[in-house]
Length: 65
Figure 1 (cartoon, rainbow, N blue to C red):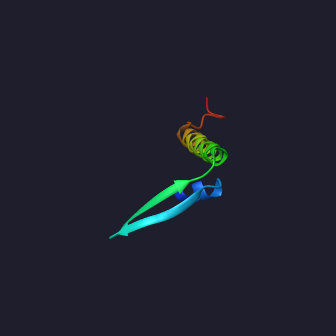
Figure 2: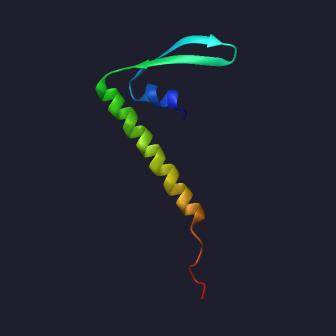
Figure 3: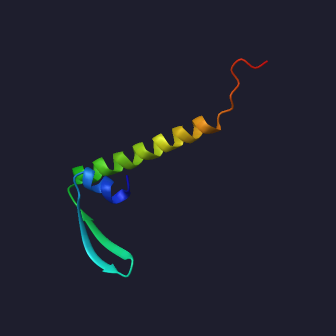
């Protein structure tokens, strides 16, 4: 999920302000509650990403002597 989708899922309004060439410029607005939900979603994504990376980097040592 990208950051714009995360903002929408959190209850924020995402508005396309302009498109210049390939670049898109957006405005995001919403309530304080929506901002808090968005921040929680970002934190959770970082935790999940960090946990997945730690699992991949952990050496397999079970059963080895």
